[in-house]
Image (cartoon, rainbow, N blue to C red; front, side, top):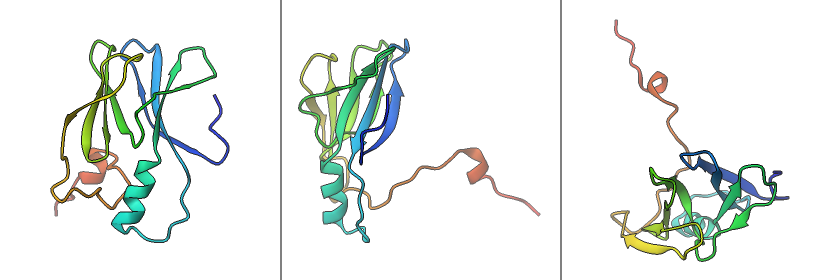
Length: 128
């Protein structure tokens, strides 16, 4: 599968049996600030997609606008993701998402950073 022209894809998550890849698509941003309005507007434009193994044509998950950080259930039947200051559940890949928790952020605002810690090597301290 090729990335959409002019779009970004990230947060890939394979189902436990490796048959379906969930991922997020978002538009690129030329914003030069991290004001809450800029960050929340960008997150609101995210969409959630599913791609079956061997397919080159992904399917957009309806009703999952604003999705980020998809995580599969251990049985691969459902998908959990963050959107709009809430936690959402896609009970099956053919169902509609359901909000199951929220708010997630103390102020109701998205964190104003984008990045992840790479692991223990970035957290290690040297001792004299």
